[in-house]
Image (cartoon, rainbow, N blue to C red; front, side, top):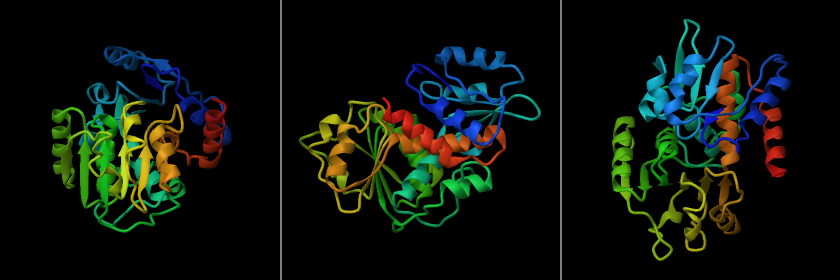
Length: 300
């Protein structure tokens, strides 16, 4: 796992538990603090023993420039959270954030529809792994409304996830108008209408809670003022990308109102399953990975 800061990451817990459960002796996953301007040199220095790298902020966009090949989903989103060693040498950039988000939201009953998939967005790695992580299926109705809070790399994955779920309407709320314009352009490229909207306030939440799915991608603390103000609709699903601390004020208020919650831990597990299978070519032991993750999170 590469990023900065990185000390808080639970990814090593997930992956190492997966290696142990799958009998992959000799495999090891560790966290390395790497800044944006250090990524190219770090990747170039990685020996043949490296099978892959996970990437968190602020490396998800610069990873595309470092990679020798970019997968279609990562290219469409403009961000990658995974570098995979190619058989022929070099590195391929992939994005497992978007399919992980789709899996977690479908499991919670977010609206879903059948349509032509974005290449790479409908699964998490090998066929068996996709079946395991998506086994809950979708229970919502097609043509739902999605509200996205934020406009960074995770928000770009959220647009792809909304498209994959068959959303009829995506509203992107951000503090920077130019960032919303980027999401609108991405939506046009992916074939889903994204409408920019101002950042909601405690005085005017702009009907955010009335969406079928609300995806919060902002850093911790940013959405806290909205927590007591949002009026949640019946059947709404909230996905909050934060997992430390948990629950966030937004998630706690939504849960108290009867809203179904998807946490950052759910996404962390789902995207890690995709990475595990890309790195190893082995079906991920999802149960063992999840047990290790949630046990580690509970100890914090």
